[in-house]
Length: 376
Image (cartoon, rainbow, N blue to C red; front, side, top):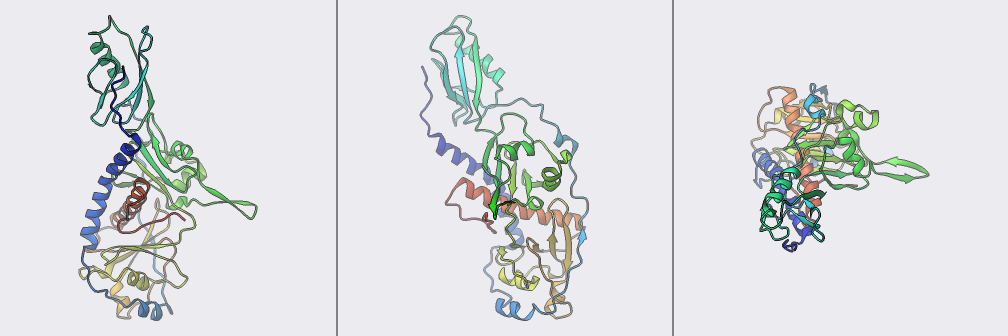
């Protein structure tokens, strides 16, 4: 007799996925609150003036490598030795061997329990399959003589990884066994491509793809891994890891940090640092304008330029032309080292993108935080 409660698993899954995004959202909200503030201060710049008067004679920033950010830890390249442990939503098949009609499909309910045969709810959350088998045999011995129980895992919902962006089948991937980045991309259908003029055009931007774990970007070089087969980048994934493959058609510039409205700015040929910050409604009053950063290039090996924005404002230095996918960051305080400054900027960027993409995937009514990043 199956005593499982009647839950709507589709609604349950959506609720659980949104709940899982809350730690990322909380980190992001806290970061944006401390960096950009919640003020509605009057914009510092007149955008039309900025765009009209600073395009001619723009200068070029001096970009330098930001240090060895692509450092893969050896333990990331090894599968976890920890056995799979059950959690809410996992589907299991149970049968009392030798007893006809006892095979039943059930799942770990939101309360962490399973319901099977004549038993009351048994705590299954956190148990391995072997431990659950022993528990069932012990509890069912009150109703059957020396029962032998078969337990099989038929579906995983409690442990998943996110794989979103320019993939053929983006979404949540169950993590029932060890899985690498390459395996996750493969399970998500591979990189998305389109047929244009009789040729195949790949629409995935590997140089700006990223993997987030516990709110931080792991320094995986997707270009080296997928394009060149560099297995030293093929890390094993953990539950709730977040992979994002952006569109190669995207050319937006991201303005983050202590500005009145962190946002994406559409790229144009003559866009400059001044006009991009004007689009973000200017810096906050407490912003540290003498060390505004522009981060450019691959997220695994970024380059950074630190610009004295005060000098640009008073005409002592020329404005700086920007390139597609540049990240402009307005700080609140001076940086100590370029490497740490760059890492803080890239982590802020990927958390922003992940929070928005994950939020939109989990709930269509999600309105976005800071900067939205629609797939093109």
